[in-house]
Each structure stands twice: as structure tokens, then as C-alpha cells.
Length: 452
View 1: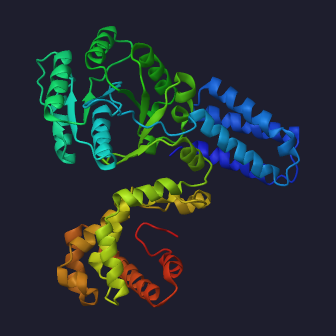
View 2 (view 1 turned 90 degrees about the vertical axis):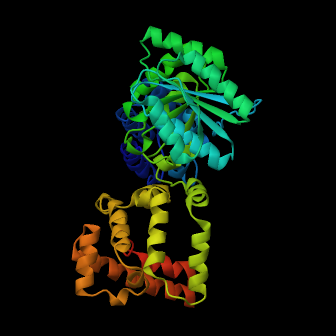
View 3 (view 1 turned 180 degrees about the vertical axis):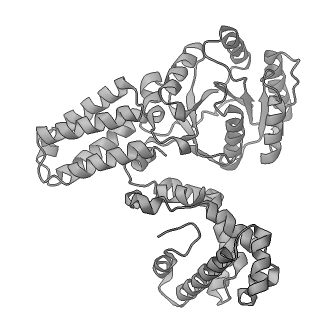
């Protein structure tokens, strides 16, 4: 996420950090490089100007210039100003209303709005433990109603049925009435994707908004469109009283211009980031955590939250107890651990959030392969229960059968068995003494997809 901007800023600040003494000249040179990095990342020009002016003023202050570690002070200032531009803190959803609290979601065509509605429902269900109803007023896009109904079924939340021949305002009113009578806490209302230049469609969404009077009106926008995302958010904000923005496809956005510009230009906070295609790939937006990721400082708090939310605690405890009692760590356990890692977004996502990992050489990071996780799971799943419990019995013909069943090569089966044998040894070491430090040291290069 935001790799291009992150790389440029880290290189520039690395040079500043190495300065024994800061002068107006080297600060000015660093600020020129930061300015170029921000502009190349498609950050809005007014935002760039305001950011550079504020950092330069603070960096040239007496406290910094005469500091024992002036370079570190500048990095701290850049971090703080990035946070200030994106919003000082996370703006939570305001759901303090008489049920049902209506959350209306608007956006451009193709921004991933309907999938985002389902992701938001999943997030609210897991974090807030609310009873949620999904509804849509999108009567224009073929199968839009069916799509949301299918997604609702996948995350096990209720759906209010509608048909393309109904009026959008009538659908919205009926959905609220049903939610109120049925005791739902939240109504998530999807709307038809539209262009901000389409007067008729904009008039319709105003009418829907007036009819439902939502507590939150969220604008969904594709972060990869950069300045266009900022422009469209500003245009929608003139028509609707937006309360926040959800940036989708942030995992594929190498620049980060939208994330750094929207709050400053529109005055509206970014409330969530879409970080993948899966329905649990939605993160609350914390400006300080995103700023830390951009500057290569990691994001341990988000990582901890993901572990708490996505790791199967019962399975983890079962494996821990098994090892503690001296029982063998088998391939079923190995598969469970790998699948837990994938649940958290894969190896690349984990690396991004670990402090210092962004400084690894690019040739090492390029070797990170999340596909290898899925291939490993396929290989283990192609084994019999007996083979998973006792891998030593897997010889020539069995290896060929497993490779054929998983669509892989015998060499990959051999590699997995070797990795697993090494992992078993590490688990044994951890049980005997040395704990987690020994385990992490021994795991280097021995987990699928990890080159280090």
C-alpha cells in the first residue's frame, strides 16, 4: 500500500537522518525531494504546498536545528504532519440513533460500492455485534439486487428484497419500515452507482437521502484513481451531506494521493480502507497508523487487532497445548497455521505492518509469494489423514499421487516435507526451552512464501 510514496519518502528522510547538523540548505533540499515525491504520488497541489510549508517551518525551528538528533526530529515532524493532513484520529461511525440507524452508501460506477457495503456489514457484525439489514435502491444495473442478496447470504446478514420495477425512494422507505418493525439495529442502504455529472441521478440520490435521513452518508471511491477520487468526493459533497469516505483498492494503490488529499480538500474524514477482495478486507482508517506505514515504521496495533479478530483462538490454543504436552506437531497443524496467516491477508500484508521490514532489500521483498501458501494448503489437503499424521510414510508413489491431486510437481511436495520437518524441529526446541525467540530464528526461510 502506497509503496511508491513510501519508498521515496524513506530514501529522503534516511539522508536527513544521517545529517550530523541541519542547515537551511539541507532542509530545503530535503523538502524539494519530499515535494516531488508527493506530487508524483498524485497528492493535491494545495495539500503539498500546505504540508511542505508546515514541515519546513517546524524543521527550521531552534528546537530542531540545535537538537542532539536533528534528523530524527525531522522524521517525527513529517510523521506528525502526515497525520494532521489525513485527520488527527479515527472518525468512528456515528450509530447513536434510535434503531434502525441508517447508513447510506453512495459512489461512482465501478468503485466497488456494493461489495464495500457487504464488507461494512461484516465489520459491524463482528466488531459492534449489531443486527444488520442490507437493502439496495440500485434498480439500473443488471443483477445488482441479486448481487447484494448473494453477498448478504455469504456473511449471514438479512436482506430486504426489491425488484427493478420499484421506485428507489419507495424501496428505501419500505426497507426502513421493515427494519423498524423487525428490530434491526442498522440498515445499510446501497445506492446506484452514478457519475457526478449526471443531474437526473444526482437528483434521485438527494430524494433517497431526504426520505431516509441517514445518520451516516458514506462515499465509496477507488483510491487508485488519485486526484479523480478527490474531485468526485468534492462534487458529491456539494450534493449530499457526506459524513465520511471509504477508500477501496488501497492494497493496490502504490501512490497514496487520494488518502493524503481527501480530508484536506473536502473536509470529510476517511473512515475505512478496502484492502483486498475478500469480505473481511476492510480496515478502520487511523491516520497515525497509515502515516507510520508510509514512513516504514510498521503498524503493530492494526496487526494485533487483526490477530484478535481473525485468528481462530481455539485452534491456536489446541496446537499450543499439544506442543506443551510433548505431542507431535503434524501436517494438519501446519496447514491450520498457514491458513490462519492467509486469513490475515497473507505474508505481504503482514510484512507491511511489521516495523523495519519495509527496509528489506527489494530483491528479497519481490520473492514474497502468497500464492505459495495456497499451493502448500492444496498439497497437504491432497494427503490422506494418515499421511498428514505421519509424513514419514510419504514415499515415491504417494508423492506422485499427492502432486497430481494438488496440481503441483513432486519437487514441490519434497520441498514442503523438508520445510515441515524443519518446522517440527523448531516446535520441539520451543517446547524444550528458548521459547519464541528460538522459534522465530529457526523459521527463517522455512515457511512457504517467505524468503527470509
